[in-house]
Image 1 (cartoon, helix red, strand yellow):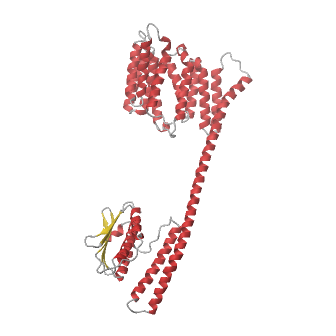
Image 2 (spheres, helix red, strand yellow):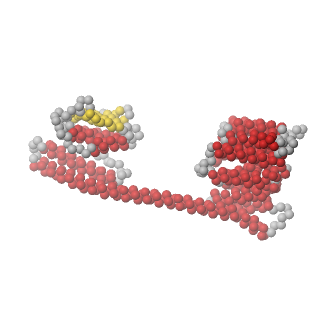
Image 3 (cartoon, rainbow, N blue to C red):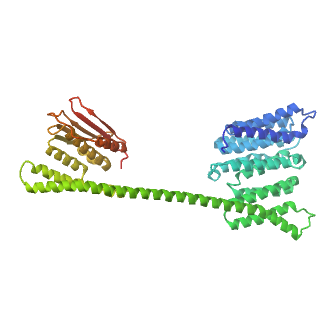
Length: 530
């Protein structure tokens, strides 16, 4: 579940209006506070909370003004507005710029001062401290949560929202009828109650801090608001359980357990309470329960995480096994290809060598020598390809410079009858090796295609140059000088050139030229090529 968008704003409005209704319920329907007027004040106080996430500063300014107005009208809604103003100031500190935070805090302190001041009574130093503290405390909390310590690392915040909502519901519903029975102002009691409940929303992020806050609320309630003692005991136990869940250290867990026992004992043991061993055991057992639950849930979470790690490791091993099987199959196929091709090429080389020695001179001697040398080179390339298929992570070793290979290919094709004109830009040597090697293979395949489809005597111009955006390869041949029947072709050569070009992110175009020949043009990008 993602707590985003308008749903959160609507919940804030409903919660704020409900808070004011519970705070002012005892005045509804009286002569000085008709139901319509009280309901109107509840709406005026609660509705702006729906906009506090988007526009925290305007909402804080509005609530400060509303606090002054309701205080001057002696409306009980002023207590609710005081609580909501503190919440808005916390949001301002969390989202706004420092200057806006400073201005909103100052305005909040002034409005709180108006709320605390009574007509005809001098404003004491304690009143100033209350006014400043009521504005500064939420600003400090918001600023703290804005820093690195308050950044949420887990995506799912549903448990935090449920803890905060459940905590506020527990504290408010259990104590709101007694807010007017305390010696402190209603807004002070309401602020403490709401803060104690909201603190559970960050208990998973800061278990130690929330435990300390709940202990402090417990001691304050025991001193100033005894009607909330039982509620604070429940919050204390929840905070203890969350601490045991989130903190792995047994030492800290035991320390928190004994502190919780002490604080809960202070809250439930009165001046006339008789301390008996059985009651001590019951108390310690009561506090042990959330610790045991927290540690059990922590163990379950650890076991679940270990299972997830085991599943991921199993998947990784399965993929590794599949890859190993694929490599074994590739190696088997490579051996088969090597054995078949090497057998036929080796036989061709042997026959050409035998014919060369049988006829050392004559018109066919040069062709036989070229067949023998080409066969030897093909066998070497085939063995290199076999090594590459056995180990795909191994980069192929280039025994010769690509430019030299291009020149050698041009000389071989010239010996076969093509009229090759070669133009190699010296700046090509600055291009990445992978691009140069690919260009070499493309030129070799292009010259082979010219010989197969146009025949000997065809003029071919080969250029390998650098361009602003890559390495440019061009193989252009003219019209065949005589009628020539093309040799059989499977089309794999052109397909291989396209795949090689596409792998480097380049472009390949080919087709008839304006003079009746054929043009092959390739552009290989060199930026970012290793």
